[in-house]
Image (cartoon, rainbow, N blue to C red; front, top):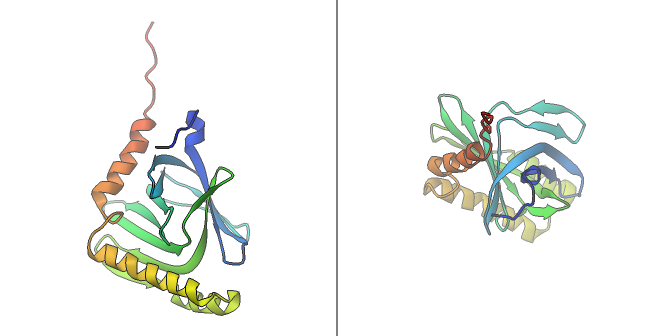
Length: 186
């Protein structure tokens, strides 16, 4: 766990960029529940998302956002009421902590795992378009394709972070850390 001097410092903002360096999307601060040498785990009950065009919207469900330090992906595990967890995987650069914010580059392809076990690869057309628009070099395209396959293999084998018990464990850290303090009786 990272040493943070005050409780307020446990709230972190996330920014996603595109390959050209322009801001793509950002999230209001989320609670840093856990940090390991491999990832940061953020938790939110709802987040304000701001798009690059200034449009704003609120997420509707509780979520755990896993931002990997070395892997070319990040995962948003969303709790769907009465249905289970839906995993949304962004194929993205490894995440960096920069100026108190977690930052990564979004590389278009997404993999979604629904609570019923159905998996879908999304935004392949956007990826193909951006390969041309941004001129992704061959080694970058290979890294993106390897990561997409790695995600599918992790899902097939039920590896972390695609384990409901682990996502619930991380969410419970947030709940335990944010319990209301009972009033003192005099």
